[in-house]
Image 1: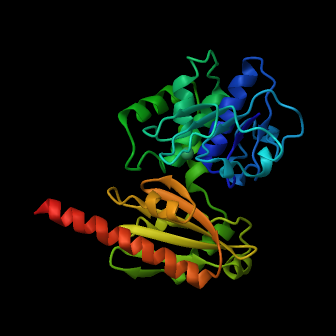
Image 2: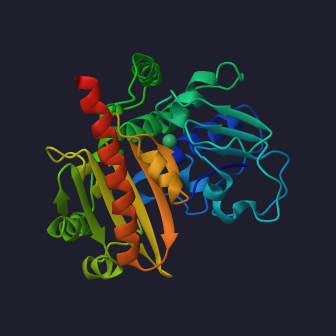
Image 3: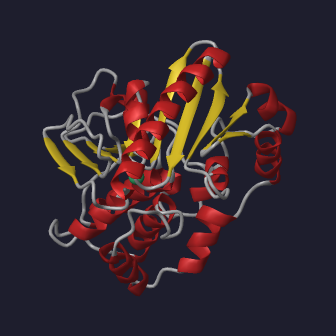
Length: 308
Ligand SMILES: [Mn+2]
């Protein structure tokens, strides 16, 4: 079984399909499992129709991809042993498996898999390349995040050489939006707030229902907020059922928001992190903004002193 994290993003699905299909090509009997299925924006990828939301059969080996800790895998592992293999690029990875292949310098888990396929004797077919390239495109927002490397660009080129259509993958994974998502953005943008370099907004359950947005995520609004001029750190609060709130942070290089996310039981990357907590939305917002302000002021203090 190959599995990935709850609320899968493009790297989760791309890594799941890329590794799963490559193992199948090599003659392995593979089940690909994602607790929350495959989001619409990645269903064009070959193999996505095979992905189950639970594992029904006995398995000999469990591989988790793009998961920083066991809780990210969701209910799939209930009653099963911990994963045998953990392949991930999150700096906060807890090394929860028997074998842990964690490469934080990789821009995506898909890049790690692409880089090792040959070592593992696995074939790079067009379907595998399309899945892995999708993982790299999405985690780097189209090769423009601060962690981009020449190595990653060369890897993307190698994946293109196999014959995948980069502009088409790019369009489907990153650019296209549903009408409902656009209206959901409108909700979030209408009450965005700013305080110096900190910007934040909230998407409530009522907002989601009003526009008919089907997901429980922020429809990637965070990426548009982080593009606003002068923003150093942005935070988005997405209200969830059962009194929970999902929080996402994005930051400029030099401001490690994964530290703040960890304080709230979450994790991620220095410039892109998340957490999910229970409690009163207003109280959560105050608490999270307070901790985020501390990070912002602390880092700015260090920077101004270095500048002198
Ligand atoms: Mn990833």
